[in-house]
Image (tube, rainbow, N blue to C red; front, side, top):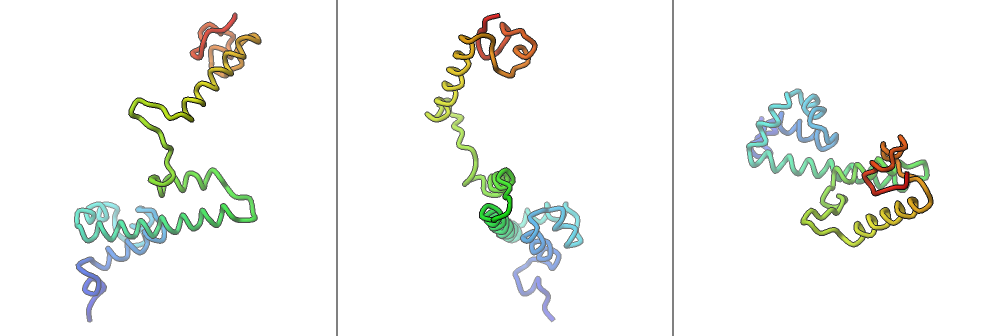
Length: 153
């Protein structure tokens, strides 16, 4: 009688069990426990191209499941957790939901506007008296040591 390994390429029954569990849980430790293997087995198997490809497919299935759950929670009539949704989406689909920070030395217009707006606000606060920022020196009344600009003492 053929085993699952014979039916689906050269992967073992344990590999298939791990991948099935991972695609439902998205967690290596939990999938390893469910498949009754050690985490190191999975790490070793990743060196095999067929297994690595199958693992990437299982990861996509887990990502699709999480994205579906995020969608349900975002559109639920009950109190949704926006913060949780943001983190889930950034973590599972970073290419789609990551922060768009340009590290090439140039700053995007919106980031530059935010920086200038914050600086203008601090300058206005200086005109009206002591700084209102929350840095440690200002909280302790040492406005001259404020890293955000000079203040009247």
